[in-house]
Length: 364
Ligand SMILES: *Cc1c(COP(=O)(O)O)cnc(C)c1O
Image (tube, rainbow, N blue to C red; front, side, top):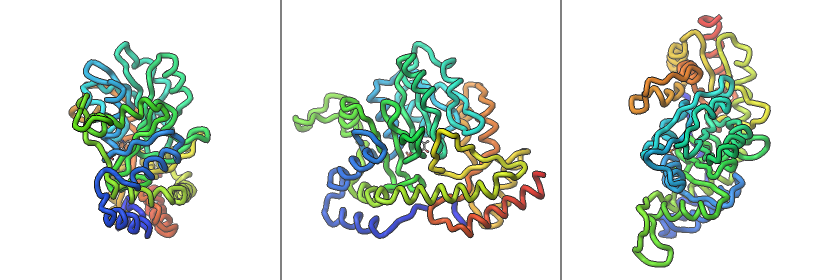
């Protein structure tokens, strides 16, 4: 079976993790943590990095640091992984959904303003499947209305919008380092921000809200959202070759595009002229309601795939009877194909042949 994803674990990953263990700095302090926080922040172009134990709590941390709470609203695309929306729900605020753009499947900037109310506390942008959102118009809306933007970049490490890496356009960006993300720490996350005060608030809340100068003095209800030094050691090794990982993922995506681009009944995610996608997942839409059949066809030929996320507004806890037609259509037709960096060209070609055969038999 060719899996949808598997991380590349090299020699330095093993070496650094072993070194962290042997140093006895196994918990949430240590050199690897400092190195990973500053190295990753520098990589994306932010002044500060605050490492966390996963990408869901890093979003929660950002929202709490912003003061989001009950009665507030946060705008979020409905087509995203559930964690973006759950993080809003944890604060007691209401997620307010927006539909996605039909070509690149991210938050459609044209649809944001109609959802803004007096209670809107933040706009959460998601860079879905490694493709950046259209940040210029979104930042313009943010300035006009005085509403901060936060970026869920959990799937988009290193993706660029007009030549600048995502995660640094808004007040703060949030990343995940789960095993199937662009780089991994096992489980892990990070907040990046260039606002020094905001970084301090995040750091304070991450570590139980303890006073930096007075032992066991806690002045807010904080959290234990810290990352371990062992996880950071893995992250340091992954960060060393993030660019080669991304280049290989882009190569794989372009190989798929060349083979599948013209096929009838198959639609690819469009890489917009202003975007450099990292293709976290190479994704296609299968038309005529045949998505599940295509997935079965691939599975029976040894290829694992994933369906798209269900739009959040259709999940029981967020279903308020709203309709977002683009997201619903894209979600129902979308498939993620294998795209991990160690996938070989031959494997990509054989997957393409399977998709082609299905398209010829069933979609033309
Ligand atoms: C993976 C992911 C998260 C959550 O990250 P975890 O590390 O799994 O908690 C949040 N948002 C999006 C869009 C993701 O893909």
